[in-house]
Amino acid sequence: MTAVIPPPFSGRELSNPPTDGISNLRFSNHSDHLLVSSWDKTVRLYDASANALRGEFMHGGAVLDCCFHDDSSGFSAGGDNTVRRLVFNHGKEDILGRHDAPVRCIEYSYAAGQVITGSWDKTLKCWDPRGASGQERTLVGTYPQPERVYSLSLVGNRLVVATAGRHVNVYDLRNMSLPEQRRESSLKYQTRCVRCYPNGTGYALSSVEGRVAMEFFDPSEASQAKKYAFKCHRKSEAGRDIVYPVNAIAFHPVYGTFATGGCDGFVNVWDGNNKKRLYQYSKYPSSIAALSFSRDGRLLAVASSYTYEEGDKPHEPDAIFVRSVNEIEVKPKPKAYPNPPA
Image (cartoon, rainbow, N blue to C red; front, side, top):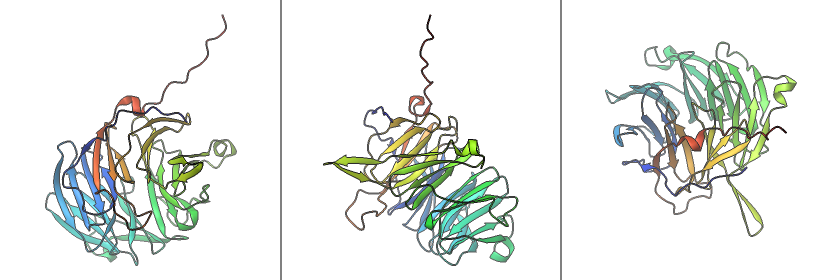
């Protein structure tokens, strides 16, 4: 896959970043607000356009994920086993409920009006945030998983759950009693991230071994024939291939192209339909821990934050960069057809 190397510019760095590893960041569906969770026990709310910290919530332990509910509230997944609701304008929080181990992932489903959490206790839980606080009033259901949950993604009523042991379960949120499909990752190594295609036809899944798989929900032979995987976030040094984990995948909301971020400090943009790399941004100071496009695709938030893939060692400070996205970086290029003979 060929690439165009851009001018060296990382985007604008947000002030008041987290003081420890960034576990996730997400843009709001309604504004340029950005929610960021961190191992420093905080969730921070920024106005990315104004480069302003709008709120900060302290937790009892590392925060492993966060998501928006609407522009005035959100949810967080805690290393202290708690699921919390955060109300930004009042600066207050309450506990929706708990798992029996750290909560790794959290998503809010607009379709179902529910919060979905995945934990290292090998369960998925659905919560109704409209209930009063307290687990017995808000818990809708608990669904055992084959292994610890590592990544979740939603599109419409579909939920994709990626766990340890390379399992992938696909659910219909309207009937959570059993997975609609039980799959195994087509990649040989541990899953890092799963993200559904915005058009709802499938998902991209990345591994610790510099690869991304493009998968389709439709079990028909014709659809399954379209799936493929590709290598990325690697380099050759002295004849040896150095391979990096691919920590983050983010789809562009307008064009359906997607960005990947790896422990090599690079962000690449791909056109999955045409199997081409569209762009590579200049290298960031540290591993790419998380990526998010704004609702209109004009901005890309990049977490440059060491993910301890090489153990404890001196590293660059954790930082969040917000870059303005140029159409040339994310828009699929039209296919060039040869001129028909005269």
